[in-house]
Length: 66
Image (cartoon, rainbow, N blue to C red):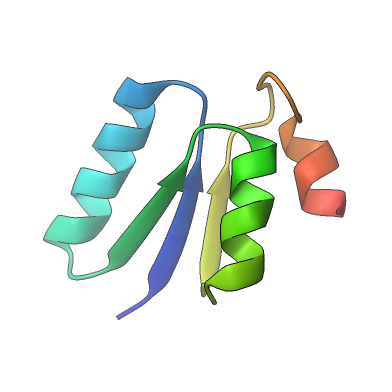
């Protein structure tokens, strides 16, 4: 199955997505903002990134374009 990085500043949304992915056999790691997401992305290979667009510290589009 896939390794997925879930990026969202809302903990409830992250929990929901991680739970849904896990029950379907995927491995999910999570980040609360774009900075944390980039640190994780650089150290852990992932197959898919699900990223919120509006977040503090580093917005989603800024994170994706990095």
